[in-house]
Length: 113
Length: 114
Image (cartoon, rainbow over all chains, first blue to last red):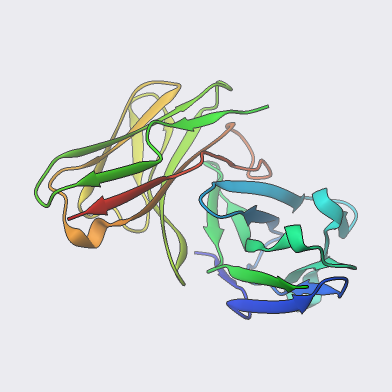
């Protein structure tokens, strides 16, 4: 089975600063990778996904992520944090015919004014 | 847009009760999933279904069962609720086929067992 590791359960940045949320996965085959965002008392919303092709993927709200096979990583970045980015972020890997997902434990992003 | 609707946002039940959580999706997706979400543990898969009347156990199926009588509806059943089942429950759906499709989530049901 897959495993997904998100380093840092809580990350705090100042408004306007770079956001970097880390995700590493274990996979012996090319994975399908996803980032989701969860605002308080809501479900998960897709930010971006990597399936094939370009390794730098752009998503909604100015976020992007880079797939690095050699590092088995898929870190999420945003050049300039906004107060509205405060939320919990989940990295996920999918596998199998039934599109089963494996989620990381999540990273809560706090944005300070 | 895909819409996944969970019948209740908040639910309070008592120990020993039989609890039903309902989920409906409107995009004719074959796959449906039930997760529970607990702080620091991320999302853990309880059960999933890849077709009507078909179900598969996830990583933590103990104490739960599911029902999928119609393609659009997937129900999670707590046969005899216990306090350790207090959690946030999330339903998701996705189309069949390759694993490159995102799952689409409902808003969740926050369940408290007293």
